[in-house]
Length: 331
Image: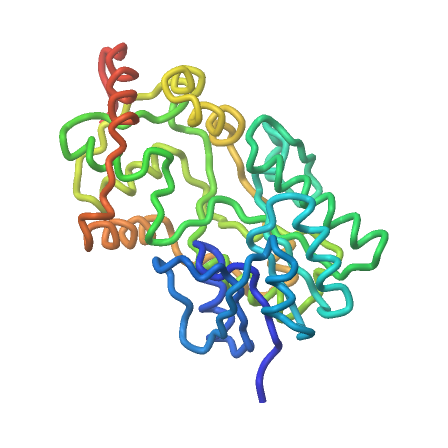
């Protein structure tokens, strides 16, 4: 007897690929609908693959026909129109629609710990602003149309293929050349990192119980990390000395425009999440992969293939300029 039928909109991204693997391992009948382009994270055995453009209704009708699903999980919705299309497409065809959003929708600075009822705000950072508008459309559909929806907020989920610092591999390359990385503020603001495997465990438990319809739920780690600690863990995994220069988010933004927006609006603020709700809905759930272990997985993956070790020459030069004004740097 097959398990619950789950449709994933997406399935080859950092979060969605881990969820595809976990759902399949837990006995769900999993279908993943993608554009069929990504090869970095292939779908696991036992997951049915459908190819379609989720923004094209004719393409979606051709792929899905009149199929029904116990749960639909949307990992890729990025505008209210995407949610409106999902509601029209899946109303009456699923008992549970889950929209994957982000903890970055919360207003900064936030009173800690952040709960699901904490204030939200659309700032200048485009990604959370768009996700917040999607959330509002999900809430509208649930409240006024009875659409059985849940909002799940992730916070900086990574897997072995992702460097959870904005400069990526360039940081490791600089350390190996005896140059410092640049870290915003004084490096002590608190942040949340969660391995995709842990997020997938939480989401699989939530989908299996379906007690969260009409709710918003965090699935985040209980391991608070400073930005210096994140860099030190990566350095230990790489076997290098972690030289660091601290500069303000404003200073960094003057040299690297896109990075300044992310830092000023999001990363510079401490974020600690209250995970009481997910633990109540999924008894026994807790993140199991500490970042020290995750950092080792990241370095193994990047080290296995030199082509993955991409250095951004522009960022490298900008970090040199930011370090020039400092009389010393932290080791």
